[in-house]
Length: 608
Image (cartoon, rainbow, N blue to C red):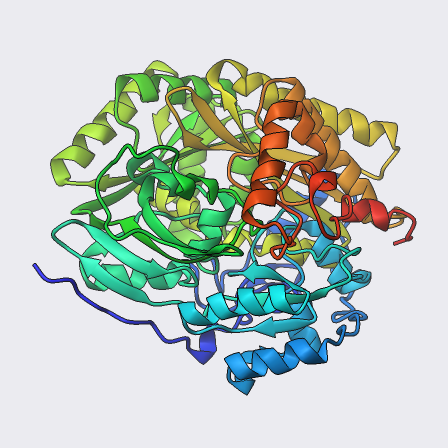
C-alpha cells in the first residue's frame, strides 16, 4: 500500500490563542452580575453553563470571602526589554529567510520568552521579565533550520526552540546573563504530516505540528497517535520529545518514547537522521534517546517517524466512586496486576471530586430530583461520606469485546474495594473537564488566588505516603508563615505503571496582602518538592526539569551522571549555541554564558 501525503491543516482565525493567559482567546471564566461563574465560548461541554456553586465553594475551601468586584487587573504587557541589536546577524538572517519570517515585535518577543508557570504568568501581568528573545524567526523548511544554526554560530548568537509555549518549568525563560543575541526559533510553520504509511502503521510528522491538528488529520485517514497530554490543543510533537512527555491514554498507547521510532535533529555538529526505520535494532548506543528530555539543549527536532494505530472501534467512558482515596488507590494497584487497565484511568481525591461537583450547573426540575436521589443513594444507603469519597474516571478504547472485558474486570475489582459504578456520563464529563479546568488558574489569579500544578511518579508502596505527606507539609509550611486563610492542596493519580503511578498535585492560596506573593508560592512549591523526594518520589514524571527544578538534580542523580550530562552537552554543542540553560546539570562546566538560578529568587525582594 502506498504512503499517503495529507499535508497541513490550516490555522483559522477562531483558533487565536490568548497572549497572557492559558488557552484560546474566545474562552475564559467570567463572573456574572448574579455571582455565578461562566466559561465563555463554545469549545467545551462546560461552556455557557452558569456555575452558581463555584465561588461559594472556593470561599469555603480557602476560608476567605471572595467578592466578585475585588480583582487585580492585569497590566499586560508589562515593560518589555529592548532587543539587543546585532546588525550582521540580522543581515545574515534576511539572506536566509523572507522578511515576514523574522520579527522583532515586542509582544511577540515577550510571548516567546515565557511558558506557563505561575511565576511567568505573574511576571507578565504584574511584574517584569528581565530578558526575552531579541528576534523571533519562523523557518518553513528543514534547510532553514540548518542555516539558522550555522548563522547563529557564525555571528555569536544563540537559539531557543519554541513549539507551543506550554511548558511549566521556566524552560523558555532566557538566561539573564546571556550577552549574545537570543533567537527564538518558532517551529510551527514546520507543522505538516509528511506521510502516512498504513501498511506499517507509521507516520512522518514535522516537529511543529500541534497536537489537536495531528489528532484531527490522522483521524481523517482512520488512525490515531494516541498521545493526548492535557496540553494537546496547543503543544507540539517536537515539544513532546524535548520534554519527555506523557499522555492521558498512556496505558494503551505508551509514552512519547514508546511512540517515536526515529527523528531528524539539527545540532551544532550538523543534522542527523536515519535512512530506514525498522522495528528494533542493536547498533550500539542510540543517540536518538539523548533527545528525549533534552529541553532544547542539544539541537532542534525537525521531524519524527511515529507509530500510529487504527481508530478504536469503541470508545467508552465510565466512572467509579470509592469510600476514600486509599481504597481507590488499592483498586488501581490490583487493576494493573489482574487486568488490562483502560486507556485512561484517573483517580481524584475528595477535594478534587468536590471541585468537579462545584463545576456542575445547578439542576432544576426532574434533573434536580434525580441528582438528589443519587446523592441519597450514595450517602445514605451506601454510606459514603461526602467529605471522604474519591472518584475514578476511565476511558476504554479498542474492539467491542476488548472494551467489554476490560470494563467488566474493572468493575469487578472495584467492588472488592468498596467501589460503585457512577456511570458513563460522569466518566465522560470528568475526562473532558481536563481541558476546561485548565483555564481556572488564570481566572482565580484575577481574584488574588495563586494556583499551580506539579507532578511526580512514585512506587506503589510510597504513593499514598507521598500524597498525604505533601498535603501535611504544605499545611505546616503555610501555618509557619502565618498566611491568610487555608491552603488548597489536592491530588489525583493520572497514569499507571506495573511498578507505580504518576501523581498530580494542585496547590493554591489567597495572596492578597502577602508581600512577594509569587516568591512565597515558589518557596511552598519547593517545600512540596522536597517532601516528594524525601519520600521516594521522582523529580518529575513528564513536566521536565527546566530551570525550576535544577536545584534538586544533585539529589536524584549521582555526580557521575551529572558530569556525563555536562560532557554530552559540551561534546554535542561546544559553542553553547542552544543556550536555554535547561539541559546540562553542571552549568559551570559549560562554555558560554550560564543560566541564572530560579527566577523567583531573583525577584524575591519585589512587593506584590
